[in-house]
Image (cartoon, rainbow, N blue to C red):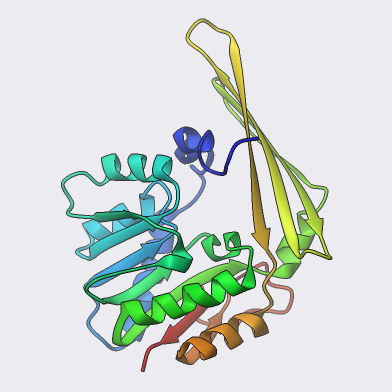
Length: 246
């Protein structure tokens, strides 16, 4: 198995074709409006192949897009050509943004991919420094319930040229959900090539995340259900956090 998002990068958009990025962009903008402040400069952490970055840039935001995968960033750069997006290949726990931005967002459970709590604490402190006073930090996570549910599950994606198998395994002791991925691709000569990756996500409790945000200096911390403006329901699989730098 190779590192995450090397083999997968080329096929990521095809495998996530069911993600409604327009809906995600609409939801992000709802929070921008709710903040009561003018938002123009936005940084997206864990931008992947830049689908959300592109939509927000088209809506007039000056975007900085950050990801640890050079392969994903290469695709994102081509996708956002001519839009003035700044791409940075950085570890989120070592984030450096100059000058500060009006909002930082991180979507599609990118935060879960930070599998060491100490690194997430550093990330939140870096995000705090990267924001202007009054700036907004918005991110989503998969809950422990979602990651525990993935244990023993197999997920399939396929079409005429591509066959992808994900297998989930959750470790209660480590609080890690690992995903082994096998990717089969039909080549031009009709043969099939195989690649593999391994991904891990950490099961953060809502209480931990709230504590990490407060320790970083954030205030006015709110928790929402999946792309709603209401508190999450019991047993929710995805929640959003919105926090302010006041």
